[in-house]
Image (cartoon, rainbow, N blue to C red):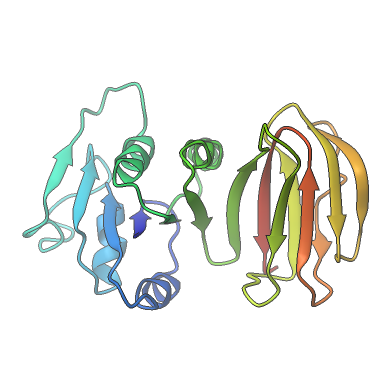
Length: 220
């Protein structure tokens, strides 16, 4: 099962529609607060909505909540609407979650949402934050051995690939079949060594021994 989360940040409506409609089996669509407006603009219908709705009013989109089950959260709480929605998605036990509207002008929310990708990784669920020019995921090392991630050329999102450490240290980082290869490197947060690598038209292999990484594929 696929789940889509649509938040109140930046969403490319065409991109959302194309990906959502590419699946033979209809994904579950969860609107997060003001993300209802993007869902409505895409001509889609949310299966569920969650949020304090402080960035959304029924006057702006009078039909957005019509017939949609929703959970109204308090404006004063210990988590964000996005985190609450992500945990709702995890409870559905999907194989993949696609998130739109999770980046934007609120840098604090953007960074928090990227960190929260680790919740899906810990639950064994593939999850991606997508905007017009970027696709973001988190991968955590397998405690039983070396972790390998293959970035398929056929499914490549953009020309550039960046790897950032989510943990303080990522050990044994190796990159193959990219413009800038790397072997058994220790990546820490105070270096930018793995920013803006490039595809060579091949499947890129990323391996590491320990830690968690953020993988960002970019078009520009």
